[in-house]
Length: 259
Image (cartoon, rainbow, N blue to C red; front, side):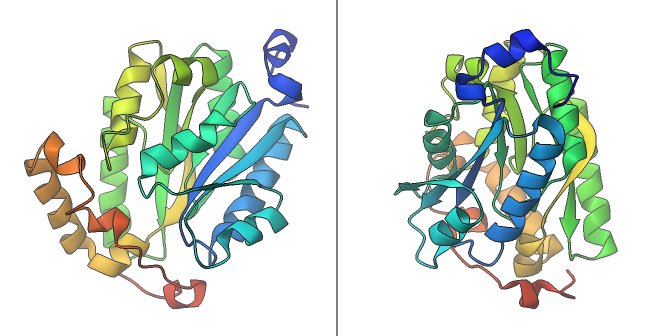
């Protein structure tokens, strides 16, 4: 048991659940096992057995749900095809006093989880973590680092790893489902209005598959186009192929692929 978690805080958790990890997943059979194994290892190091893992399986056709069950997740089936709504569906069945949202292609370790819980104990309403990209070029890693530093400065969380107190999440209504993208930014802003919001320096490692698929400059160009479109551009699925084209790669195809 992590001694940093006080007894009063533990009483608030339902059924002894300190942390609920919520993982949205659509056709993630190639990566979900690795992601879940990493979550289990990190959670046990921080809170022992006082955690749960919920996979919100969003209409997968590749066996994602079954693999997730085999790797210790509570799997709920949804038909959303909207990332914020899928995360909300997972959060609705969560029992933990702390919610940590982890993308299905993101590998975490003990450090960001411990740092997140430390900030929660210090009164933070929520936060995020630094993000590294897997199997991409040095240029892509450098650009990613710059974006991370901007997010730290603005106190905004990247969607692949975001944490918050469940009470605060429920108070702001969760992820705003009118957005098909950027929902983590709007939630970050809503949580900041309720208390301290911290992007911890501990890093999580996420897939570089979007960079490999579109190329670094092609991906940045798409982001610029979306930003120029304003809020309306992220309130519909059309034009957001970065997130919704459904293309997946095998682990083997990712190895050695550089942007």
